[in-house]
Image 1 (cartoon, rainbow over the protein chains, first blue to last red):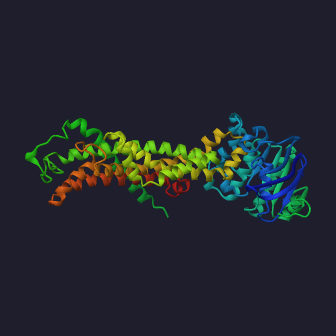
Image 2 (cartoon, rainbow over the protein chains, first blue to last red; image 1 turned 135 degrees about the vertical axis):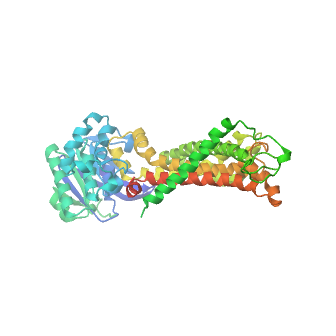
Length: 223
Length: 278
């Protein structure tokens, strides 16, 4: 289970973006989180991905309460959650070729020898042709780069996926291809999914259930 | 739109000038075996001729030889001071940006404190602590020039830390060291290196300014600042060559180094590199 209990988080002391947000994702379940811009759903996604320490509240990951975030969190906790960000341009190191971008988590975790095989396996799964793998981010389109970012998130076979408005920048066909790639991965591995977005139609079709942001907050409050 | 021909022209002009300067300062002194301090009052203030292409100064010393020796000292000061200032600035800026919190605030207030003193004044204070020589001048230039590098590196690290590609690296299991070595430093070093190259001409000018004020190298030692300083009186008498040639020796290499820095900056930017088809 991925359990977020009464999370309060923000970027300035004593000025949280939201207070007391709760959300649970069961293993293998796909949950869509729907909310307006600026409400804090991306911040909650970053808390779930262990990238942002909340001011208050508990995150329980597969039965273990998370007590450390970012680099302080053990590598095994961090790599249990794969993250895909909204803007592929800022989510990709501009110096890395796409093949290196996808292989980066494997190299960072000491699995360098598996990198080539895993890239060869993931690239067709997300719809990247071999000629694209030798290009740098500025030489490919947003859609192609987002495919590489998805492959990077899947490279360590995480048990959980957090997709923070993954398809917001993309056209309908690329959106469909990326969603299909996520669903194929989930069908093969049984991974759980937290998909954050604005598009109710997409989230309703994609996810097992869609949660409105206001339903994550304690009754009577709306950040 | 980028013009590859202009880029190549700038590269070759700058590289040839810097190459010629380096050859001159490295080869001329050991090859010609002449004493640049040899005084011959019978030849004082001779205009440029075949025997003395840059003329002679007010005590009959050959100005071409003096300019080459002066340039050698100025380049040494420029390169070493820029290197020291860049290492210091990068270390302070990276520590402030990467660690944040109190470390950041303390280090940046230190930078503000140094910046609040006019840097020529601070430079004069540093050289005044020691006997005149090359090393006090290098220390003076280095101590007053690491501040901008520290600010550049800190702001780069701060902006990079918040970018999703660093977050993706953290999420992908990268250690602090790997994030620093693989993602932060490669992104920051080109900026720091560029700042260092741009600092070389600035440091040369600073050395010349200190020497011109009589606070740099001892007056008998050939440095471009000393040469211009000692030629002031002859300029008023209408003898133009003792100031013109040291002045050109200061301007041309500094422009060429700045030109090479511009080429480097273009090549560091992957998008710009693609436009230039390099």
